[in-house]
Amino acid sequence: MTESAPSNPDHRIAHIDLDEETIIWRNADIEQERRIAIFDLIEENTFKPLRAVERGADGPYHLTLAVRDGRLLMTIANTEGEMVEELLLGLARFRRPIREYFAICDSYYQAIRKATANEIETIDMARRGVHNQAAELLLERLEGKIETDFATARRLFTLICVLHIKG
Image (cartoon, rainbow, N blue to C red; front, top):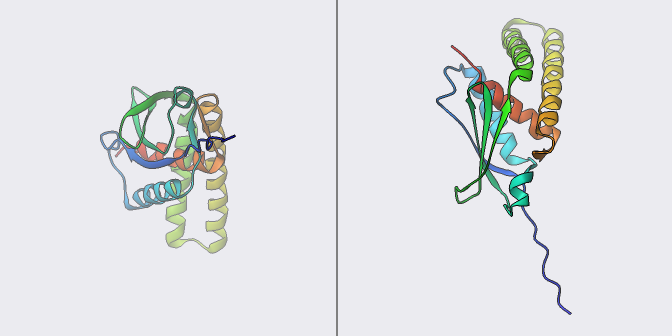
């Protein structure tokens, strides 16, 4: 009796792009945040688009993030570049966390240049708190659509913020 080897799909993001037309302006600090989030995301993530998987799609995936008509557009393709799913998420519930995250990041970057270590640590704790709450919200919004983990949601939220930068 022979058993066939079980399929071992690779449900992760292997490549990520941000729609450059969406990003109007970014400074060196934000550019560094973007680079780190993308690097960390590619290094380790969990990303399983449930409807695409039901239709037979396997990872790894190429993800493109854009903002269209006030909604987050997630275009998911396979490694051959064939789109396997498009997902639109309303961003209304993210407006406040995005504003709060920008404000706390601005305070953090200013503090790095002139504050004491204790002041920087306090601001960083607040920044992480806002980031964590936003990641939980993203996990909630992706439920039933994309299976992912907390660390991946945090990094995706950072990239969603980058898409919202206005000059």
